[in-house]
Amino acid sequence: METPHRRDYLNITVQVEQCLAESGISEGLVLVNAMHITSSVFINDDESGLHKDFEAWLERLAPEKPHSQYRHNGFEDNADAHMKRQLMGREVVVAVTGGRLDFGPWEQIFYGEYDGMRRKRVLVKIIGE
Amino acid sequence: METPHRRDYLNITVQVEQCLAESGISEGLVLVNAMHITSSVFINDDESGLHKDFEAWLERLAPEKPHSQYRHNGFEDNADAHMKRQLMGREVVVAVTGGRLDFGPWEQIFYGEYDGMRRKRVLVKIIGE
Amino acid sequence: METPHRRDYLNITVQVEQCLAESGISEGLVLVNAMHITSSVFINDDESGLHKDFEAWLERLAPEKPHSQYRHNGFEDNADAHMKRQLMGREVVVAVTGGRLDFGPWEQIFYGEYDGMRRKRVLVKIIGE
Image 1: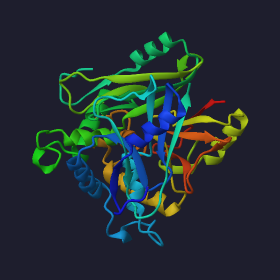
Image 2 (image 1 turned 120 degrees about the horizontal axis):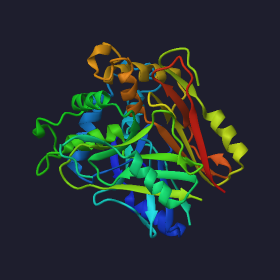
Image 3 (image 1 turned 90 degrees about the vertical axis):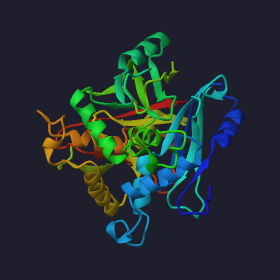
């Protein structure tokens, strides 16, 4: 992943479905997690208004600025990103049934970036048979 | 699930235990997740005072009204429910040991509803042997 | 676990790695969860400034005092700890690849205590082959 903005949301459902298809697993669990501690993987709605609401809401609960309000921000300026990631979560675990992600009607998997503009990775681990 | 109020908490531990008993699995993992993006599955205390505290606290961190404060609320009025669900979580993963949910003394599984009064579903997936 | 303060953070990555080594499992998943409902297991950065930021931030979002603000606090005084645990999470699920925790560069596992000074337990469950 590399997002053009400090904070962004990417729908990664199709990529996870591709991993699942390649695995050949039909019954089991998929773990999808951010490998970085200033980003999230979560499941919610693919609606751009909601993502703007998330942006404003997370800025209210864990504001980025002033950077000096956080002890973590000596050489860093991303303490807020560590907090936003806690609110949105590191990982999701999804059931695999009949070779497919066993989802409700609106569930989509997102990568939430809170300290972007550099390369980051997401891990997909699939277990089952 | 169908709750009589917009927001509610249901203890679903017994139903998950029934699923586990039917599965015949004695060692493994249980995934329990909301299949809807305005509700949660989480583990906490079965104490009605605490659930009222959760209600007041979530309303403070992600208030429902005014509905117009959220961009998601064009045709919808449930942006707050998408946020409350992020705070409380989508899913829990519980260890199965000796055919039972491997719980600490007070752990109970709850369905947290933030946009209720309609039918919703919870998924229970059990893997192991 | 037993922490000397009401709230504290302990890096438990080495203990989880020891459990994994003893299991002999090389491909699978590890579940690590708090067995108590006033503490968390989460993955973030091992940086003491950030942990002080977490302390101040959680006190802002879910303040301990006055105890009387919470209905849960009749015989108890720990309603805030139940909320802090929801924000930080109960559990993590980590991929096991080649016999090791499949981590990004800065991921470390922490036990977050919000109502300490007494003995508590963490569960580690490893499945795979």
